[in-house]
Length: 182
Image (cartoon, rainbow, N blue to C red):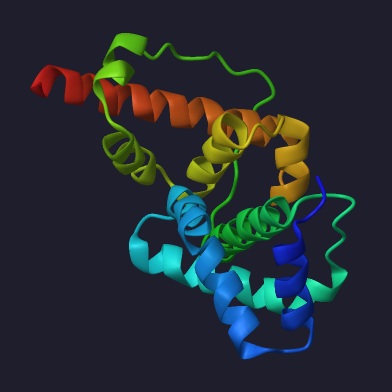
């Protein structure tokens, strides 16, 4: 889990506000972090906003990084996911969340998913409401459980389960529509 010597040089430079080190860190992690931000937002404009807010947090808190706990990539990725969640919370403040403790899991035909490429699937996920999209990403892609999602997003476990179920239902409908069109 420890960081490489090159990572440690970048971290040291960033702690000292070395613009070149900050630029190198940004360029090195831009691609993978941009992909993460795109998964949580509805469009590229919002993804760039989340990405830049995330990197601002990285640079402000770089001195808190502990290479014995996680790799630099993992630490930055966590900040990006949390920045995306903050962004979604900010956009969804007015909306009320439904509380459901038991939810039936809709079935999504794996044959339909096999025919989609990653870009098509990302477009479908982006059609979900922001909070539902975030729960789906955290659960399916990031591997969080409902209790962790509830803590991170400030919602109950039941609400997290509802959002996941709603995401699956909506994706199932979108996939069926797409499958019929093909």
